[in-house]
Image (cartoon, rainbow, N blue to C red):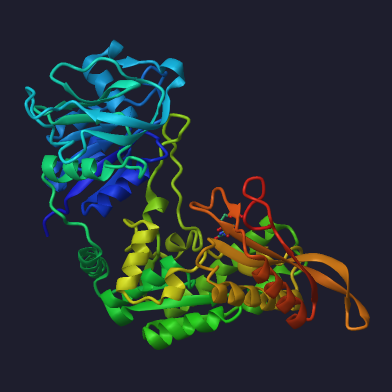
Length: 526
Ligand code: XMP
């Protein structure tokens, strides 16, 4: 198989780096991100399918001590290079030396700017292939302190803006380009045209990244890796493990066995749905382990949230390990690891950050059981996994599911757990989800759920005074779950949910709505 065409995005620490990667993939070329300090021999080569390199933006000034620079190998790979924002400044600094970059005057330039092309068809260099098809004047997004003050030898100016006289540069002979603005953000009206020009007109890429071909390639890769070996996979019912399971099943059929651990902390109906979907519809070999009592026993009397998380993680591993051993001959562990889990990010404070996120739900198990990992989704972003899932006919109810924390209802039933409180929480949460679904608000919120407080409040139900529990409705809107706003649910919907919960769930006599954003609060309560 010929090496897949790819564009390398070198990450200099910008918040937009992964957007570049996504945009390139959306345009139909595979893109991968590596930290800017990656060694030459760990980076792709033309023989390995490399067609171009994009240097991202970043928070540094080229003059900062230890600021990341452009390594020699980038210009020696024989493929076109595009520097974006800091990437352009770092290129100019490397090629023109000390006064190539001016320190941010008046604190820099942030927001919309009007870009004016100066690459006239009649000028000496003619029309720039990077800007072809863009309007003579268009709106771009700027976010920079420093800027390029002197073009390196061999470069010409191709665009400027009122505050940035050298907004884009070109050396068509060396095939190096720089743009001060961010073509990857949607605020840059014609950014897509620029990136498309770089990929197709300059790098000579062909449209080669599409889910259909990825799926076939991924299945073949799995077959090549596992041969006749048995693969086990911990299925949680979430998007990633579900798509991984169906993909593996398509690739290797009954060589795959999924293990679903019911920890007794799932929401109403969830365990039955997982079994029905994967065992009955997809005909995947599935072992469902009912371990609810074991988890509850281990959690008895524990009210500290971190302690709860640790216990749940430990018991999960014990249960999963016993089940895996009982299968005897497994050689591989399948996991739904995604691209954001495997990329090493450059710290925004400058300097590389070596933290690599891994999937922890089976932490330590591969080594202990001598299993090799099979991670068919490790090149994909979440929305690509959803698209793949749609092709694999994974139900929308799974693909569009809100995130649900690994420790499940244990961190939504505040304080020490008992079976009765969990049953109340489960019932209240089911009502809230039904009403959100019915009103169309489930799809308009990023995460919505009920929390049960460990306090009692006074109420009056019928002719009697009651001391019931308090349920909290939490509903948030967020892009990345790092910050979130509370969803402005309509009063009528809130009223319906509160009425139904207090009427239908015996132990709850009061419902409150959480109107705190994150920060200062978190999305979960524990
Ligand atoms: P917070 O509460 O920190 O949550 O604002 C951010 C996102 O992470 C989820 N979350 C967890 N997910 N195990 C998980 O798998 C956990 O222990 C955990 N705690 C929080 C939370 O639901 C939200 O989507």
